[in-house]
Amino acid sequence: MSHALDLLLIGGIMLLALAAHTVGQRLHVPRVTLLLLLGAVAGPEMLDLIPTRVSESFPLVTELTLAMVGFLLGERISFRDLRRGREAIIVSLAVTIVTALVIFLTTWAVTQNLPASLLLAAIATATDPAATLDVMRETASRGPLTRLVGQVVAIDDAWGAILFSILLVVAELVSGNGVNLFETVGYGIYEVLGAMVLGVLLGLPMAWMTGRLKPGEPMLLESAGFIFLAAGIAGVLEVSYLLTCMTLGITVANRAHHHIRPFRSIEGIVEPFLATFFFLAGFGLEWEILPTLGALGAVYILARIAGRILGGYTGGVLAGSSHTVRTRNGACLLPQAGVAMGLALVATQRMPEITFILPLIIGSTVVFELIGPPVTMYQFRRAGESGKGYEEEPEEN
Image (cartoon, rainbow, N blue to C red; front, side, top):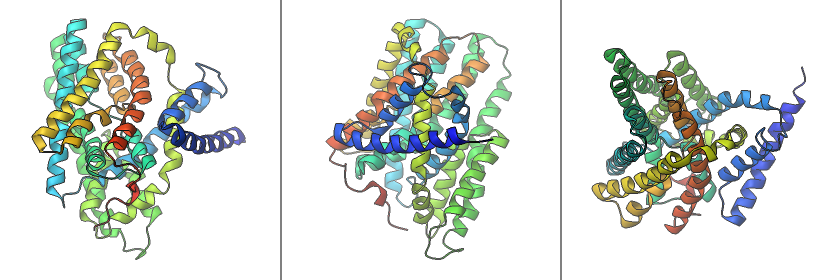
């Protein structure tokens, strides 16, 4: 069977990503947003230029991309610098809690639906690490704000997963579904802790091997092999592959003598995956959902923006961050994509009677993926951190 069409599509996406990067630099618009728009224009909802079967590859592309992104973000949680780690933990917890609280209060006021408000509060805490990392790389940003945002997006999905597991139990209990409390709580704990344990178990041998097989040279096969193996085992065990790969990266960053090498090797191949991921994400978006969001959609979007900014400022104050960091970090955490939609799917499967959660999250994801990256790029520029060499950031062993 010929794969000519698939090869044409892949090649076209790569060149579109290059064009998006060039145009984005001139217009000061992130390529993430441009690739999403290009995918949407080419998709079945608009010009229908590409066969819809290409969307069948999206789950695999998503897992491959987010596995590498999770590993790269794990590098930013280094126990060698407790002060930085403390700041990121405080800010991420504050952003998670404040966002969830603001979303819960506002959606409860509009819908008077307690289970739905609890679930939306948890889902709203999820971010899009792929989009955030891509903006950092594209703008070559480096500095206190960039470092903190990179650390926060690496761990706040973990807090969100934990919160979602707890609030899902509460929502099911409130709705009277007769849920088994211990079974539900137990699965939530298993999914989070199992991912962390798996990441450590694979990270220790990876950290030991780094720099030993081929001294002085980065080992792409070694790095990619461990990352994809970790994601695959996580899928078999039904634990979070994103959290597994983050933990893998954290373990390597803190235990390997040459910890920079595997991260630099993955950075060298992640670009095509990111481009394909964002294009296919735009291709599969259902734009006609946007007008149906109504008052609830507007409230959710505005409340999440307010929650991120307020939570970022609160966390910055509690952590003793600089004025620039505390006033700008929350606005850098607006992008929301795959993790949120994954949580919404779980919520819909467990509580199908709440029919509006999935359309609401899909529609709001479109908005946040379009406005989030440009806002993040703007904040880095205003903080004076753009163009300082993001890829060179950690150099110590």
